[in-house]
Length: 359
Figure (cartoon, one colour):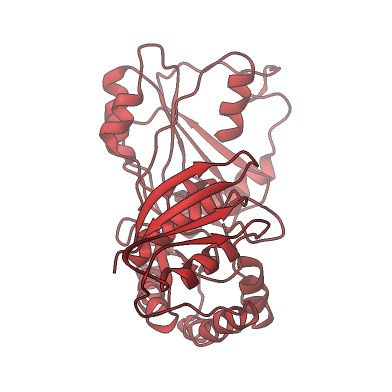
């Protein structure tokens, strides 16, 4: 969706984005207000791939129908768990998400919806795509979806119990953790949390050595220097982010073992980073922290150390040039109960972030 929208803008089109709340869900009224008389297409995921939040597709589809705007739904993550309700116009899925063959996509066009291919077309695929149909891939995708759907309800209930367990136990076992995503309206197999004062790459490596393959939307990984656009949009902590996706049939014992291993992995990373968070009540009115040249998660670590040096109501100013600080410092304030005052740009390209101690 994002790449298609960017391509549309490059040729002179306009794009309007609808924000999400801290749970990762769009607000239906905000979606309604974003539609214009000349809106050609609305887009929405049925469920988010990173945090598992299920979107109000049915309600948004009704808003789009009333406005005469077709709604395209990306159902890749949710289609294996069941149908997508609502009067949407187009729906897409990917077979590998439900255990089918990789490289096979599914596009559903509701009867009565006008559809015109943008690329070269011939008589095959009803003119919607060039080339011959991949019959074996189509059959395999349909067969695998049918097989997964037959067991979806029972497996969803079992996996939801396991992800509920992770959501409840991780904050008990690991200090300073933010479990993100909607706690109820979510996919059954996904759970995401962020561990403060660690870098995501080290956490992923530590879990990998213990036999667990997880992913991360954190900026603190070798593959990216910016946080996930999902976590950024939600305004939640991105550092030390861990995304756990439970595969079908995973034994409960493996989840229990994960919960046994995780605290030690996080503790080891924090020890290597020299994390010591200040406590008590300081007496300073203001403290300035120089975090120039530091990358995630170090600016937040320095903020956490400094907050104990000011009195309640005192202000800590963090000067940082890591762009991720613009996301993680406000999110840290929210989770820790302090007030994020704001940021002021500096001539050198850095920013000064002000935080008022709340307790």
